Image (cartoon, rainbow, N blue to C red; front, top):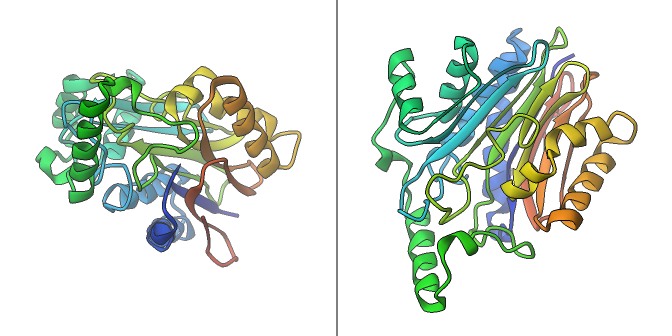
Length: 307
C-alpha cells in the first residue's frame, strides 16, 4: 500500500496564507500520488512532489527561495532512499532550476553524497540537470523581505548572521521555510526529499540541515522516512531526523515527532516541524511553530491537508 505526505515549511506563517499553503501542498501530493498509483518508486514520487513545491512561489524553495546576506537565492536540497541508504544532496547552489533534481543526480551518480557551491552547478551541467537564470527564483515577496531585513539591521546595527532566527517567532518572513516529501511505494520502498532556500539573510556560505542526512532528511527501510523544517542549526545539533525516527518506533509517531521537536527546542532553542512515513505506511506530522502546511494521502483514502 502506497502513501505520501508533504510539508510546505514551518514558521510564523500568517493565517491569511493558510489556504495557499494547503493548496500548494495538495497539488504536490496529487502529483506524487498519481505516480505511486501507477507503480512508481517512492523516490520518484517524493522528488516529483518536491519539484511542484519548488516551482510554487508560495514556498521557500526554488522559486521564492529567501535571499542570503548578499541578496542571492542560493538553495540546498537532498534525497534519500531507504532500501540501500542511497543519498544525494547539494548545498549553496545558484541557478539550478530544480535543486531537488540535482540532488537526485548526485544520488544516481553514486560517487559522492554531497556537492556544494559552483562545483555542484558544474555537476548539473555535466549531468544535464536544467539550469536557469538565478532571477527566476526571485519574487516580489523575497525581495521585499530582504530589503526590509537590510533596513532593520541598518537601524539596529546587528549583523545578518545574528538576525536570522527568533525562536519565539520563527523566520520573521511569511512563507515558512523548507519543503519536503516522504513516501512509501506499493512494494514497500521508502524515500525522503527536502529542498530549501534557507534562512533569510543567512551568512554567505551557510548550509542548513536540509541536505544533511540524519539532520533534516533521512530514509531507512527499517525506520521510515522523514523530512524536517525549521531552524536548521537546531536540527543539525540534535541530529533531529534520525533521532525522531528512532523515537517513533516505540511510540505514537505523531507524539514522538512533537516530543522530539520540543526536546530540540528545550536543548537548543529553535522551533520546527516534520513529516514522516513508517515502514507500514502510517503517516505523521507535527510542529511547534505557528503554522506548517501539510498534505498527505494513503492508497484507498482521501487526500487530507493540515496547517
